[in-house]
Amino acid sequence: MSIFPKVALRLEVENYLKEGFTNKEVVLAFGRQEAERKFETLLNHLSHPPSFTTVRVNTHLASVQHVKNLLFDELHKQFNGLTVPILQHPDLQDVLLIPVIGPRKNIAKQQCEAIVGAQCGNAVLRGAHVYVPGIVSASKFMKAGDVVSVYSDIKGKCKKGAKEFDGTKVFLGNGISELSRRGIFNGLPERKGIGIRMTEPVYLSPSFDNVLPSYLFLQNLPSAVVTHVLDPQPGEKILDLCAAPGGKTTHIAALMHDQGEVIALDKLPNKVKKIKQNALLLGLHSIRAFCFDGTKALKLDMVKDTEGEPPFLPESFDRILLDAPCSGLGQRPNMACSWTLKEVTSYQPLQRKLFTVEPHIGGQGMLGAGLSFEQLKQLQRFDPSVVPLQDMDIDSLKEARVEDMIWLANKDCIGFFIAKFVKCKSIQEKDP
Image (tube, rainbow, N blue to C red; front, side, top):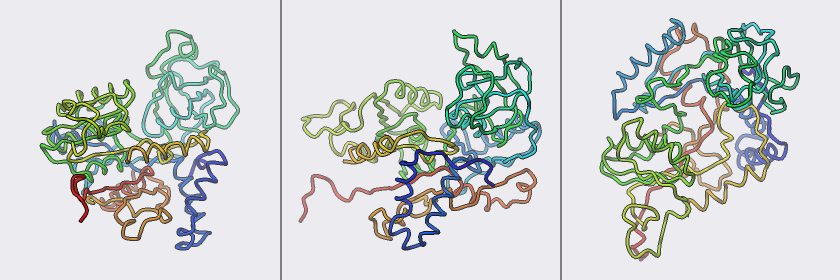
């Protein structure tokens, strides 16, 4: 069920995307009216959260069943005794799925209001509490302990510290303020803890803030599929080209039983630090992270290897994972994006420069990509618009079949695509 407006994009960006999603091949296959309907449905889905929260179990330290039991107890406490099922994905054995309850329509809006930035608002819709840096405005009479209605400033128009805001805002639910208005906007040093603890969110999702941190990694379903498609094996040497924050890097190491070597590259020092922190937290020792530009990772004119550090000679790795930088427009929920067309299209040259299947869970690739029908079937495309927006409550979960919920989780996720390439011959081989 749709309760939010479709994602707000600049007109030039929306027209550019519409042109791609209604290309000649798509229109020929579905008709223009259906192609345009599917595009509008996609924009509407992007502003809403997926139907399931997905977490990956760190199988290097614990079994899936053990972690599932621990998580069940944790959710029972978070949801005040409410029993929400935890499903193990049948094709991705290390992935657990938790249904998102909502939208909940009978939440009474309060006179006391807090406005949060769009990014903070997106996190709240995925189960987060409101942290102080995300609060843009609060009612002048707000005190610690007050029940507060939280709204997202999706267009970024609210001024920091404002006492009221009449612009475009989206209701996210109610919470209890941990601080007074003065405590939030008292200047330096800036507070960083929880400002509002959400008690009645419109979408009820578990909070994973410091929940089983060594055993669980919060990860969107398609991102977890990627490493299974890569299929790393113990003892191999694998390169993760654009690795931060390390979700797929650590997944590779876990699937290899921490046996072998995983080289992770990112060109920003703080991101490399995050990769190392996640590897340490998850107890994985086969990962080596370097601050290095992935476009320069291949060195053809080196006489000898650089002792395991980048750049690398050709054919130094058994497998390579490239999760190339992109616009991120497929992330959910996302109610607004202020990017220009130039910014949205700026990633294509970098992706080409960086690029110098079971399990098959996603749908086939998109028409109009210049690929044959057989090639399209080998891609995996995750398009959330193929299913209606869900209206999920506890009663419907009690009656739902597990296989139906798994099917929904596979469809109603973030926008994503995966392509796997198998090397046919060595560069040393010559054509006959």
